[in-house]
Amino acid sequence: MQDRNLSRRTVLASATVVAAGATGVLGAAAAPAVAHRRDDRLKKIIGRMSIEAKIGQLFVPYFYGTSATSPSQTDQDRNLAELGVRTVAELIAKYHIGGVIYFSGWANNIQDPHQVAELTNGVQRASLALPTPIPSLVSIDQEHGANVRIGSGATQLPGAMALGAGRSLADAYAAGFISGTELAALGIHQNFAPVADVNVNPANPVINVRSFGADPRDVSRMVAAQVTGYQRAGIIACAKHFPGHGDTGQDSHTGLPVITHTREEWDRVDAPPFKAAIAAGVDSIMTAHLQVPSLDPSNDPATLSPAILQGVLRDELGFGGVIVTDALNMAGVRTKYGDDRVPVLALKAGADQLLFPPDIDVAYNGVLAAVRSGEITEDRLDESVLRILRIKDKAGLLTGSPYVSPKDVDRVVGARLHRLAASRIAERTTTLLVNEDRTLPLRPGRRKLLVVGASPAFPTDSTRTTVPVLAEALGELGYSTTHLATGRTPDAATIDAAVAAARGRDAVVVTTDNVGATSAQRTLVSRLLSTGVPVVHLAVRNPYDIAQLGSVPASLASYCWTEVELRAAARVIAGRVDPRGKLPVPVQRADDPAEILFAAGHGLSYHD
Image (cartoon, rainbow, N blue to C red):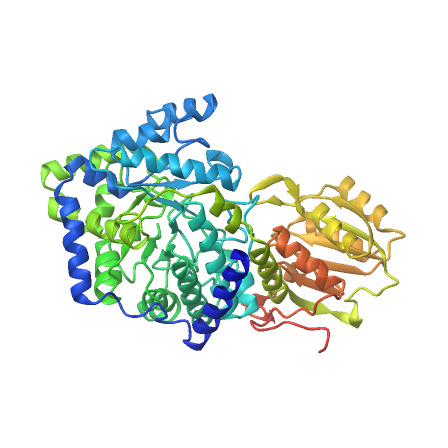
């Protein structure tokens, strides 16, 4: 019954968000009198806090381990080496930490939903043991698509560019609502999503398919819809990366990108999605570690720029919520200043939450020294603490229990109707770019298939990779499949093996992943085409791959390689569903980027 109720709420709310145009659906801000009474209550909490406790509220560090108090010995050793404590409970106690962020993989925070829920309860027990007991705001980067933290057991949904291809505000809303509902059941109340960057640079190495697309108006509508979906589910949404990371060829994790847009270009291209997020009531906005000379000629990173954070975001755009820094361990914010100064300058610029400092002790004591010296006043500190307590209060952390129940995890996370909705959304996003001589759907006589090509591991499960899962999905649809994962850089012997395997097959399905001008994946596809066996191409990440491949008879884009998207692509290949996706970005010719090979909005169906 709970699943059915969730589904009904999602459908009804989706209809509401579409009818309202995906803006302002959350309604007006709290009435002044109500907001005043709330702030009076929160200021009393602040008045009981020490300087040290106030500073701790600002930090959102990482940590290692699946348990708050008893992680593995390996994770304890890593915590001790990097954080100076053995457990996250000790980290919270030592620095009065106000929030933490979970990561899968390298940080080993996430195994399965029940473990995440228990970890969250342990974090909250540690937070409530502080001298001023304030629950932690637990955060995560659960964008879906290419950027997923919670995999096994939770519903996997299409990512931003796939949703952009679907062009459905109801689907964008539903994806946010479903994801938000599951995160809330795990005790996670802040999600660093959606991405509000407009991906106008096909060579963008860090945003790319994490963006809804290249059209500022379309991106704005999708961002507003997804913000509303998350926040209707009780999640603090976070639009990122302000003032816009969509037109860069450099990754701010490894360098300091420069956005060369004029002020007019910024107003036209980069600003609209953030304005739409603010109009939709977004509770937090994340900064970008990049230079925008037209907004701040000092060329400080936006994260450290008063002109950008205070002048543009707060004063011009009127954003009064929480400003979160992007991770402070990234190279883009560390090129000019030391790790003790970066958090201080971010606060002086207007930031509130300080995410992922590379050295929590250095960062915390840097801010403490700045407050004691008067460089940062206590009033300025209180401003940020008040904004953080507001979103904690909105999330119900200050008025109800912060703990979550295993029964809610079982009932909500990975619910059957959630998974069904995700599958249907994925079907509406799969995009058919080329279909010469009606190669697709594969005819009933073409039953012997070879599935070959790049096979990236699933974002949260390295034991499952693209090619065998796609072959499995096609096999379940009635095809006789063999498969060969050739990787992103197949050598000559591997390509020869793929060509040999293609002979005698009725068709070949070849996957690609980020094909460049010198990529061996181009050679693989060319050699497969030369066999005379019909070739179906599937770009499992970038829709731009087709520009590098010449004349393939059929080509699709799935925008990611998670299971929900691969299985949807398999159903399209088999003709079980009609492709409905439309490119949310233009695809330029590889040999002449000034010429458009496929315009944004292009997408074929079997009925064209």
